[in-house]
View: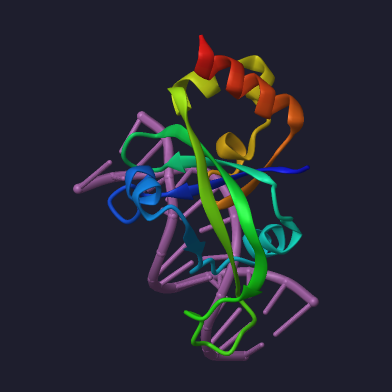
Amino acid sequence: MNYWLVKSEPYKYSWEQFVKDKVTRWDGVRNYTARNYLKQMLIGDSLFFYHSNEGKHIVGIARVSKEWYLDPTATDGKEWVAIDIVPCKPLKRPVSLSLIKNTPLLKDMDLLKQSRLSVQRITPVAWNCIIKLSEE
DNA sequence: GCCAACGTTGGC
DNA sequence: GCCAACGTTGGC
């Protein structure tokens, strides 16, 4: 079981819309590091859903429902990939970026160190820590 | 609106 | 292969 984080600007695609849709194709990723992570994802892997720009919270948990396939929105001839994800549940309380910043256990997260990366890997320690923060 | 970080492009 | 220029992301 691997843990991941995906980012979305809520005005483009929000958690609320995702819940309504019940399943969505995570496509349009055009960064090689992010693509490699998409290719490593297995069915059942868990993802945090983060709202960037507006909100700046981790708002929910999703799961991989279909492993990588060629991204049909890619038009540049390169091998970009997509996955399908389904919403699992919202966090009881969203975990804000500022709280993450102020939590020593989380200081090495990509969210802080490489904020532009749209698909990130989360360590089990960080995952559990964020779950705890969301329940406090 | 500004700017830092970082990826991509293209000239050499 | 190097590096300057440029574009994008995203926090503030």
